[in-house]
Image (cartoon, rainbow, N blue to C red; front, side, top):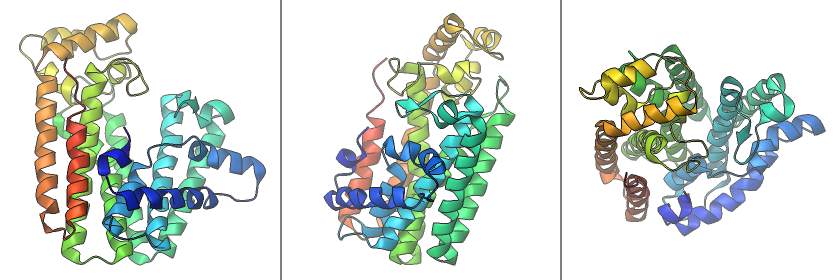
Length: 325
């Protein structure tokens, strides 16, 4: 996914070049070892999706971002990076962004400490941007924690509900996307109606983004998402396609007998095929289309046609990612 090609706002792409240097500078402490740890994933690259949303929401693609707009993007990206450091420890991941994960290179303890430091820098930058931004980022961190807890609470559970699933993805994914747009609206000083609209768009964007990933986890070719197809099944994270499949009259009982514990490669593939054979993928795509419609409705009050078109195009392109299966 190339976010800039999908957003089609040239000024935002230019702004993100400026943001890259701020991002690295914001975590340099002066300790050579700590600096290596905290910049490890920054220098590995990434889509920078959350700062793109923040800067686009601030400037609407119509003027160059201010330093405050860019720092808002830095704050949300650092919170995202911190969550990746912690997630990789929990998942015992060895690769992130095509390089060694921080925990694989430096060990779990240093990865946790490094993630904590990134979170602290995110909070510090937010505080410098004002009380409203600091309050927002604190609230967002609470949502991230809640989402992670909701996921861990139901791991390996074939009785996980759709409400459990939505609670987890709204916290783990959508909350920070929503906060990204909200931060941009705050640093730019947009009025309340526009701020609320952009915040809701970000939430819906995050939901579509996660639903897309969950469909691709089931039907994509290996490593299209940087992990084997069906990896969520193997790790006991039963996403929406799987939850729908578990209720399916034809495959639900068989799938339930396979799931509930760690899977080897053959079992993972068997489970994946059962999910594909159900109506789970179609139901998830339908859910994503519902959030797309809500996002499009939210954008109606945004005064910039360029931003409305760019955000709508970006979101529509994610729905087009669903391959034939």
